Image (cartoon, rainbow, N blue to C red; front, side, top):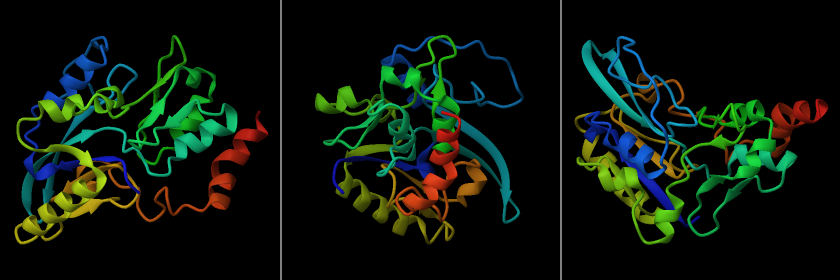
Length: 240
C-alpha cells in the first residue's frame, strides 16, 4: 500500500518536545493549565487540545537504568478501526485520504459515540472536546503534506527522530536503522510496521515506553471483520 508514512526513531529522541509544541502551534490549539506531577512529562496525556505528547518513562532494563521518551500520536492505521466504528453511525465522519493515507476526523464526529470510537483504537488516541463533542487527533498535517510540506512535528525535530515521506522510502529507512541498532540493542524492533503509517523503532521493548505502544497480535489489518463486529459494532448497535 502506497501513500505516506512517519518513521520515528526513538534511539535519537532527547525528549525536547519540539514536535509537541510545533503540533500545537500549527493546529492553533489553546494552552492547557498544568501542574507538577513529579514527571517532566507535561501535560500528562493527550487531549483535544494536545494532539501529540512526549511521554517520559523511567525504567530499569537488564539491570540498567533508562530514561525513555515516546512522542505519542495517531498511528494512521492502514485499515483504521476508528473509521469502521464511525462509518457504522455516520458515513465518512472519519475519512481516509486516498492519496496520503491519513486518517482524518471531521466535524461530523460530533455525532458519533465518542467512547466507542476511542475504545476501537488499539493505541487509545482519539479525544473529544467536551463542549462541542467534536473528536480530535493527529491528522498527519494533511494540509501541509498536500502543499508539499513536511508535517510540523517532522519539520521541527532537531535530532532526526521524526522522519516522513513515501511509505516505501520510510520502510526502507526503518529497516536500515533497525539493522544498524541491532548490535547495540538486540531487543530493538519496528512496531506494527506492516499495519500503521507511524512506524516506531524501539531500542528497548515497546512495553517499557508506554502501555499502548504496540497493538500486538490482533493488529488492525489482521483483525477479522467477524471478530470486530462481535467486539465493537454489535454492542454499539444494540444501544442505537
